[in-house]
Length: 150
Image 1 (cartoon, rainbow, N blue to C red):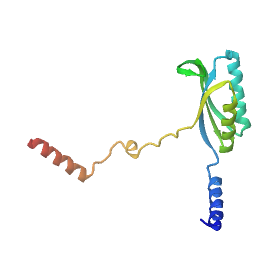
Image 2 (image 1 turned 90 degrees about the vertical axis):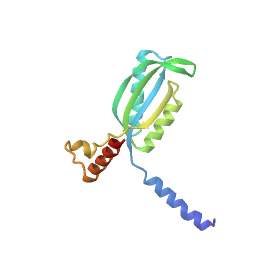
Image 3 (image 1 turned 30 degrees about the vertical axis):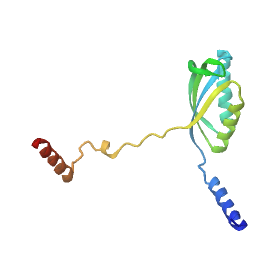
Image 4 (image 1 turned 180 degrees about the vertical axis):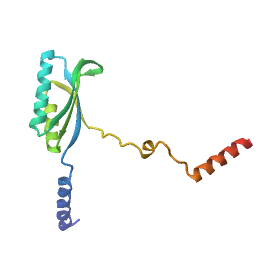
């Protein structure tokens, strides 16, 4: 590959990175260590909300952490506070949140997922009286004839 070809490819890759979506809706599920008291759980939640807003995001929902028994030990712990936060943020802010959570020792594990979009209703479910086409009727009649012969 010549130098001119490699120079032409680099700007194309950079332009693709700039065309990435500006933001999205995310769901953060996490396990907090049980080494902290229940009062400290509330402060950890407020720290998490502050982290989201400082990173340019907007908190859209929250499920309060509850103690759960873990199916296998994580960092030598059998129980943890499990909570979920829903938020909107751009990709740069999302990277900041991932780095901060990885360094925070209160969080045993976390995962950030794209929030699933609500499915659009199918056209067939909107029309209660769906007409069966003549081809479908003839197929059904042929099938009945075949089954009745046996």
